[in-house]
Amino acid sequence: MTVFVRSITFCSLLLCVCVFAIAQDAPEGLSANQVFRKDCAKCHGKNGEGRRFGGPSLVSEKTAGASADDLRNAIVNGKGRMPSFAGRLTPEQVDTLVRQIQAANKPQ
Image (cartoon, rainbow, N blue to C red; front, top):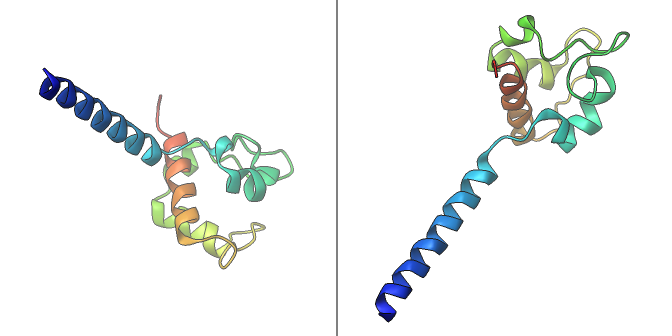
């Protein structure tokens, strides 16, 4: 009986660890990303919808058609009036923003 209980306990614990690991890898939305809120939302809007006299919408056909490399290049090197974030953001932060922008443009 104790072997059975230990097996069930171990499997339950393993399942919890797996679910937690998957949840950690799941991309959070742009509006939940602290880097986006601090560095991007003032121009692109709090949900990436764009601002009339600020940056363009990040949820648009044009952005949906951009490749990951195009998005990464715009973030790192700047584009138009958008400043460069090279040296201010880590490569991981840039990659997270790229993934989140792409996810925001996928049909629900």
